[in-house]
Image (cartoon, rainbow, N blue to C red):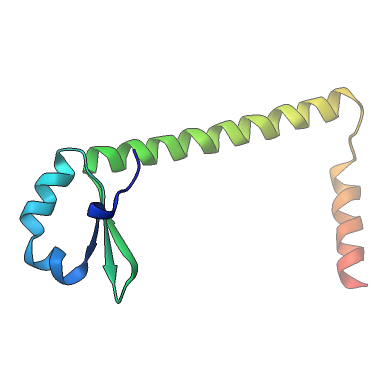
Length: 96
């Protein structure tokens, strides 16, 4: 869903018409409230916000799964180092 010009409202208008804007948002609109002509806040339905948060958690899980897969591929290919040696090497580099 795209944002149209009617979905961008100044803060003064949002203050004066909050109930009306809230009803529009509950019906599916998203509103961008501006302050001094610049984007300030967004009004979205709470269910949609929950959905966006769920999508972000899923995205993080997918990224972690990708990292796990890459790590397992490295182990299978023999691209591994002893943890103690690797940490000592990092410490030496930091102190140099």
